[in-house]
Amino acid sequence: MTLKIGICTKSDLDEAMKLQKREQYEAERKSRIFNAKQRLYGLDLDTLERQILEKKKQQSDQQTRDKLFEEQEQLQKRLISAQERELEKKQRVADSDLNYYRCRYQQKEQRREFDLNDPNFLKKARPTRIADDDINLGVSSAQIFHGEDLFNLERKVRQREQQRAWLDQQIAERKQAKEARKKAENMLMESVVCRDNLLQEMAKSDHMMRNQVIQRTREFNINMAKQKQLDRDRAKREKYEDDMAEIYNMLSSDMLTENPDVAQSKTDPNKKIAFMYRGMTPEELRVFRLGQDQQLKLSTQRKVEAQMMDKQWEQYAINMDRTLVLQQIDVDRQRKAQFDELMRANAKLAVEQDQQRKDALVALSNAVSDDFYDQFNRNSR
Image (cartoon, rainbow, N blue to C red; front, top):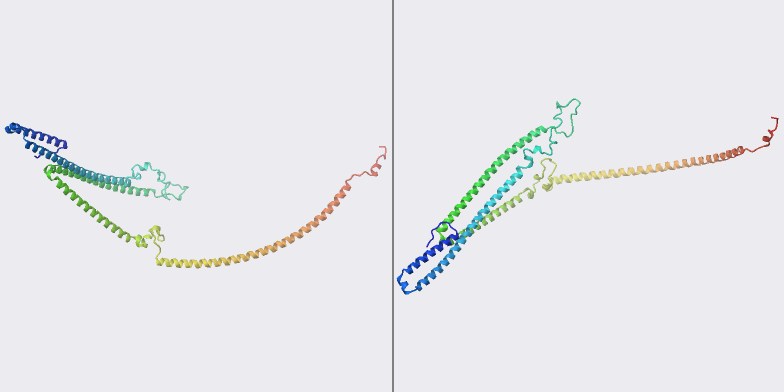
């Protein structure tokens, strides 16, 4: 007997089964009561045994149905979880794109009020003069200063044009992001609608094909296994193709082929880019060797000339030392002669000073003679 009910839960099904069993039991009881043979002769053992078997069969069928319902419920939960994971993945990708857009095109320097909070406002201010023939400068004003910026206005105009271009680009990118977000939301709604339709179809097919659920589950699992195997094969094939493409790109890259043209600097023709330079060509090596030989010859010639110059200076120093020694000997000889003459003059002066000192002592001795006493008592006065 098939239950004709709509979408319901497990408790509703159990309640319906109980009502159905009660009605069936009541119908069987009525048939036994109103049956004269069974009422006169007593119990019908065959009927009781059949009822016991039917009850066991109903219990086994109920267990089978419960198991099928549980498997169907687990399948629906897995499908819902897969859909939710897919939606979360899409949301994470959208959030990542939004954060990249903010970090790339909504920086602090791109704000409209950044000029009010610019720490380099004074550096960007209008210069004292705008040209050498500025009318604001007088006759006595200084005209030229090193390091001044005379093209500030033109640079600001270019900056405004560049900022306007950035704003246009940001507007276009914002429109694209908005369209992409709308498209993602539409896809999300479509996926939700598809999920709802799928759930409705599954709910309908649950009541229409209840006896075939095991076979359909088996077929679904087989198809899912095949699909996963196909996905794994496709991912493996794509990974292999990507690896082969990467290997080819690496083998044909400028780094492995050692292309000398990529090491040339764009700003200075005589400068090489260090991390891309792979050595000199044979022609450059030949020119470099010739330059080294010329430098070696010049270095050897300079060394020989330096040695000759050192020898000349050494000989000149020796001659100068000899001349200075002879002059020093002559000067010492003259100085010694002058010293001897000075000593003789000093000795002579010492003798004369000693004689003068003795004469002075004699003259200054103040000795009293007889003439001193004879001058007294000569008259009455």
